[in-house]
Length: 273
Image (cartoon, rainbow, N blue to C red; front, side):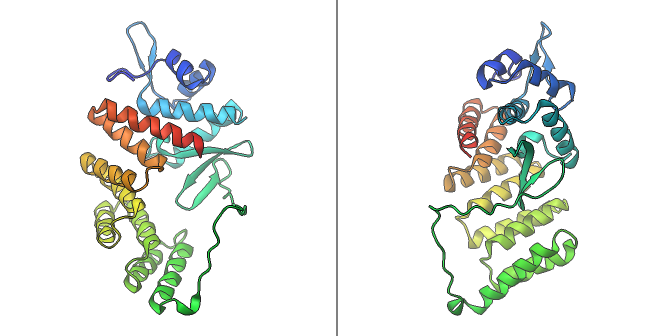
């Protein structure tokens, strides 16, 4: 990708195997916004190229082009503060799905997808409740309460998450859920402070570094956000989303080689999942 220009339609066809018709549909729908070159050709940004690649993957998964465009437009309305390239999008049963911190759901219907499959190679886990510390058990109860309350009462959910970390300060999911809840309310400084507090106790949890990066990026602290994403990748090299975010910020900062390296890793991991 050339800095200041982007990639052409012909390059997208060659590199990603997407059809010109699908690209034209995304342009017509306003889902990607290329610039015009001197000869009238389109040049697509890094983020647009990622979204076009996603649309191509959906088409190869036998989702109809019209359904792809309809679902992406609907998703854009649901998440107006995020470029669609940053949303985890997939196909499920011939429909477009998206994934958030609560799980996967069908975009057009909003129906949650429940995964009841049990992998034979998954390791078994046995919890001996008689040996569990009372504070941990109480923290888990508070965490469960917060999750149940969050969809309809964010204030009580916030109180439940705070109670969970007060009872057991190393309750990772309580920090993650509460941080996202604060960020969703645009209380970014509080979310950043929470993640930093959590990292003082749990410095090797990649999700905390990743979420910190998201919150920092939303405040405009690009370099600090990039450092958080890089640390997340050090701890979890297989996290495709962290590679994508790092690639995007390196591209924004003009670090083209690093952007390409992370983007290539993102493509490899995203294809595998």
